[in-house]
Image (cartoon, rainbow, N blue to C red; front, side, top):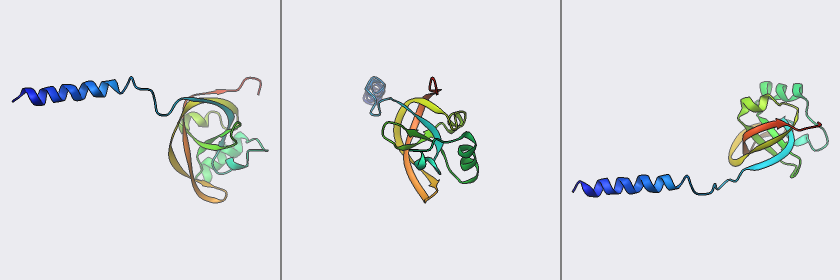
Amino acid sequence: MVRLPFTAALLFLFAGSLSFLAPSRNPSVTWSGYVTDTYCGFNRVNKPPTASCTTECVKNKDAKYAFFNFADKKVYVLNPQTEAAKFAGQTVVVKGTLGGVEKFSTDKGSSSGTILRASSITPEANK
């Protein structure tokens, strides 16, 4: 009688360990763009952000640090926020995964957007 629960527990643990070998549902992406904020970030197509404006919006307008992607012209909430803060207003290369949605403030009111979870943020060379 004790064998059945024990065997079931072993099978459960073995199956769970195999999930680490499965490919990720959210593949890693590498993009180039600006570290901006969600309050003004949607205006970044023609006007690069500044560090002071980005930091001001995050501190005083309930905005989040964000990433404006040059390729698709979209804004993503950039996490971790503490790491994003180090690159406010800069052109960077971000490697990470997309997933989840987060609420934030914009100059047009409340909104939400896709989260970009950065595994690395580096300044873009020659920018």
